[in-house]
Image (cartoon, rainbow, N blue to C red; front, side):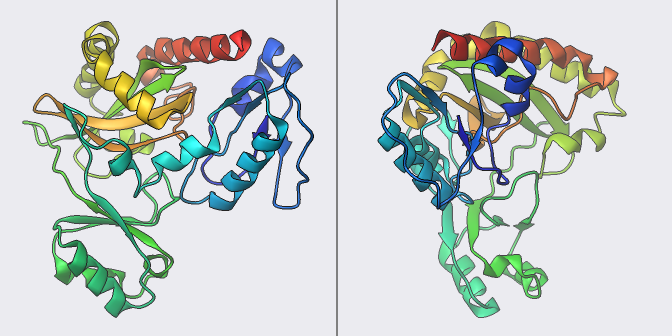
Length: 307
């Protein structure tokens, strides 16, 4: 098992270490650029836990070199597949899938405010989301409705360290709420995980405090949607999710999206998404999500044990 403790990692190590069977037959290894390439070992299985294609480029290249040298029996989440999920590359990876919308995304590397203005003018999509690649949970991420709002970024540091510009797709429903649905792919199968509703466009797990913690109706709505995803939607749309799985190629990754006019608008798809706990962990308000987390844990262990 190879990992580098960075911002974006596949969040399964606590699950593995807490499981007797998995813990007894695995070990974690932290690697860096000084790590020597190992000899071939065709009996071992390797799980790459580095999942962020934007912040961990050097680590992923190093891990791929280690895997090439080891020639393991199987490698889960190959670095070459992780690269397909970078902010800028994902729209190309998932282009032209019927029923699927991927907002346009481009990278820019402005060094001053004038170059930032020029990059946004060249992108020429308003509203636009400006964000730092490699960050998760809504950090370093702003929505600009027009060019005049660029002044708010002028004195910040992060826009001058490399940015992604993403077309904003308004996914509000009839009630004026935004949604962020998460489906996890494990060993080629799609599993419902969560749906967070908010009156704010930028949604992450902590967004439950915006409305859902206080609104039992929204919690019932999530509970009903998760059941519908599990019982019908994921089956009806199995070809779509299989196409996403085959194009990305990762063994474990998540897809965050909204359902709009019977199409899915994908916000991101990568291996960094939490799905076995956190957020709703030990919160009785969201006990209805426990069975979905348990199902994912069973699927993950089955994949690893079968290997």
